[in-house]
Length: 252
Image (tube, rainbow, N blue to C red; front, side, top):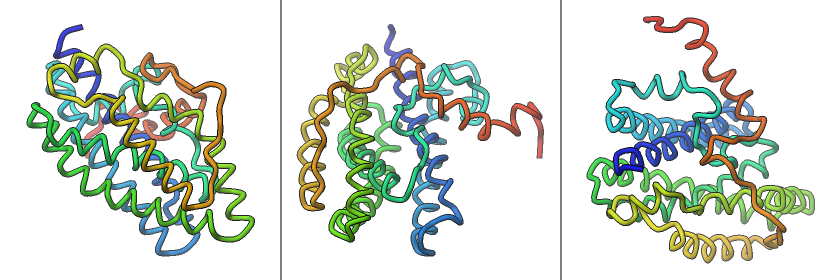
């Protein structure tokens, strides 16, 4: 694998994570438990979509085949997406979404902090903008973690169950593949093993302060780096890509 190929795959992964997670969060629009959260979720979704656009645009430039960010988002098949499995899972109830956002935003906080120092100026620039948004995303998820974990018996039960259900998807966030090793050696990406140590410490503290127990799991879900996904991604893409698939090359 060449450096260019490694960077292309890495950028797709970052863009796909933001795109799919943003699409999922957007499903809360007009369905939030309170008006303030309806607006907050919409803003978080928009932050993710904006980040996806930046990473996918750069991915198209790196590939060098003239593809735009729109083509990469709307004209790839399910097996061509590289997003982590956790991002494509259905939103579930509000506690489930909060648990997912706590896991992802705490991971992204350390990821983008490191990527701000990337030797690739474009990656560093996108990360510098993303980290500002990610700080808010993490604070939002952390505060709701405290409220749900220390709230009523029902809110605690739902939040603990959400953490239990999602924990098997956390291991995939830190898998190091060929592209990760190549780019880390070049100083373009970060070492995910180091990110995992920082993430584990932070999320353990937050969940402990929320009276939530970290579950012990026998195995971790994996496969997205090879284009293997849950059944949910196909349904999501069917909805997200409908217009572009039905009317290819349509102009507004």
